[in-house]
Length: 109
Picture 1 (spheres, rainbow, N blue to C red):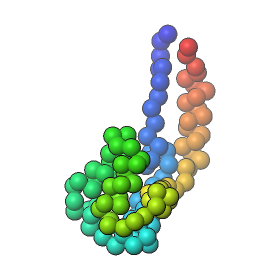
Picture 2 (cartoon, rainbow, N blue to C red):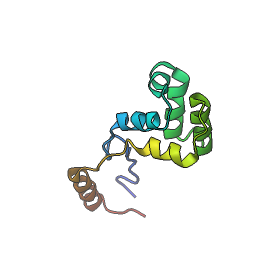
Picture 3 (tube, rainbow, N blue to C red):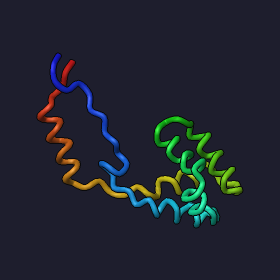
Protein backbone atom coordinates (compact mmCIF):
# COMPACT_ATOMS: atom_id res chain seq x y z
CA UNK A 1 0.00 0.00 0.00
CA UNK A 2 1.80 3.10 -1.23
CA UNK A 3 0.74 6.68 -1.68
CA UNK A 4 -1.58 8.75 0.41
CA UNK A 5 -3.59 6.79 2.92
CA UNK A 6 -5.45 9.56 4.75
CA UNK A 7 -6.15 13.23 4.29
CA UNK A 8 -7.20 15.50 7.11
CA UNK A 9 -9.10 18.67 6.29
CA UNK A 10 -9.60 21.73 8.44
CA UNK A 11 -13.16 22.71 7.59
CA UNK A 12 -13.49 26.01 9.46
CA UNK A 13 -11.68 28.75 7.61
CA UNK A 14 -10.21 26.37 5.06
CA UNK A 15 -13.13 24.65 3.34
CA UNK A 16 -15.96 26.57 4.97
CA UNK A 17 -15.68 30.35 4.92
CA UNK A 18 -16.07 31.89 8.36
CA UNK A 19 -17.42 35.27 9.36
CA UNK A 20 -16.23 35.29 12.96
CA UNK A 21 -17.79 38.63 13.81
CA UNK A 22 -21.27 37.13 13.32
CA UNK A 23 -20.54 34.79 16.24
CA UNK A 24 -19.62 37.74 18.47
CA UNK A 25 -22.72 39.64 17.35
CA UNK A 26 -24.94 36.62 18.03
CA UNK A 27 -23.61 36.37 21.59
CA UNK A 28 -24.21 40.10 22.03
CA UNK A 29 -27.81 39.65 20.88
CA UNK A 30 -28.19 37.07 23.66
CA UNK A 31 -27.14 39.72 26.15
CA UNK A 32 -23.51 38.69 26.49
CA UNK A 33 -22.46 42.32 26.26
CA UNK A 34 -18.90 41.68 27.40
CA UNK A 35 -18.11 38.98 24.81
CA UNK A 36 -15.78 41.18 22.73
CA UNK A 37 -13.63 42.14 25.69
CA UNK A 38 -13.64 38.62 27.10
CA UNK A 39 -12.56 37.03 23.87
CA UNK A 40 -10.11 39.78 22.95
CA UNK A 41 -8.46 40.46 26.28
CA UNK A 42 -8.68 37.38 28.43
CA UNK A 43 -6.41 34.55 27.32
CA UNK A 44 -8.35 31.98 29.38
CA UNK A 45 -11.59 32.64 27.50
CA UNK A 46 -9.91 32.56 24.10
CA UNK A 47 -8.69 29.16 25.18
CA UNK A 48 -12.27 28.10 25.81
CA UNK A 49 -13.10 28.53 22.12
CA UNK A 50 -9.82 27.00 20.97
CA UNK A 51 -10.14 24.06 23.35
CA UNK A 52 -13.56 23.28 21.89
CA UNK A 53 -12.24 23.49 18.34
CA UNK A 54 -9.35 21.18 19.18
CA UNK A 55 -11.52 18.65 21.02
CA UNK A 56 -9.80 19.32 24.33
CA UNK A 57 -13.08 20.00 26.14
CA UNK A 58 -16.56 18.59 25.74
CA UNK A 59 -19.46 20.57 24.36
CA UNK A 60 -20.96 20.57 27.87
CA UNK A 61 -17.77 22.09 29.26
CA UNK A 62 -17.91 24.75 26.54
CA UNK A 63 -21.54 25.55 27.38
CA UNK A 64 -20.72 25.82 31.07
CA UNK A 65 -17.70 28.01 30.31
CA UNK A 66 -19.80 30.41 28.23
CA UNK A 67 -22.41 30.61 30.98
CA UNK A 68 -19.69 31.19 33.58
CA UNK A 69 -17.85 33.90 31.68
CA UNK A 70 -21.04 35.68 30.62
CA UNK A 71 -22.91 35.45 33.90
CA UNK A 72 -26.06 34.61 31.92
CA UNK A 73 -28.36 31.59 32.08
CA UNK A 74 -28.20 30.68 28.42
CA UNK A 75 -29.54 27.41 27.07
CA UNK A 76 -27.26 24.98 25.29
CA UNK A 77 -29.18 25.67 22.08
CA UNK A 78 -28.71 29.45 22.38
CA UNK A 79 -24.97 28.98 22.85
CA UNK A 80 -24.75 26.54 19.94
CA UNK A 81 -26.66 28.85 17.60
CA UNK A 82 -24.46 31.82 18.53
CA UNK A 83 -21.31 29.73 18.09
CA UNK A 84 -22.22 28.44 14.63
CA UNK A 85 -23.40 31.87 13.45
CA UNK A 86 -19.88 32.31 12.05
CA UNK A 87 -20.34 29.51 9.49
CA UNK A 88 -20.67 30.84 5.99
CA UNK A 89 -20.53 29.15 2.61
CA UNK A 90 -18.36 26.56 0.94
CA UNK A 91 -17.09 27.96 -2.35
CA UNK A 92 -17.74 25.74 -5.34
CA UNK A 93 -14.07 25.77 -6.36
CA UNK A 94 -13.17 24.13 -3.03
CA UNK A 95 -15.76 21.39 -3.51
CA UNK A 96 -14.48 20.85 -7.05
CA UNK A 97 -10.95 20.51 -5.71
CA UNK A 98 -12.07 17.88 -3.20
CA UNK A 99 -13.77 15.89 -5.96
CA UNK A 100 -10.64 16.15 -8.08
CA UNK A 101 -8.51 14.91 -5.19
CA UNK A 102 -10.90 12.02 -4.63
CA UNK A 103 -10.68 10.97 -8.28
CA UNK A 104 -6.90 11.32 -8.45
CA UNK A 105 -6.03 9.67 -5.16
CA UNK A 106 -8.37 6.72 -5.27
CA UNK A 107 -9.06 4.40 -2.38
CA UNK A 108 -6.51 2.22 -0.62
CA UNK A 109 -7.45 -0.74 1.49
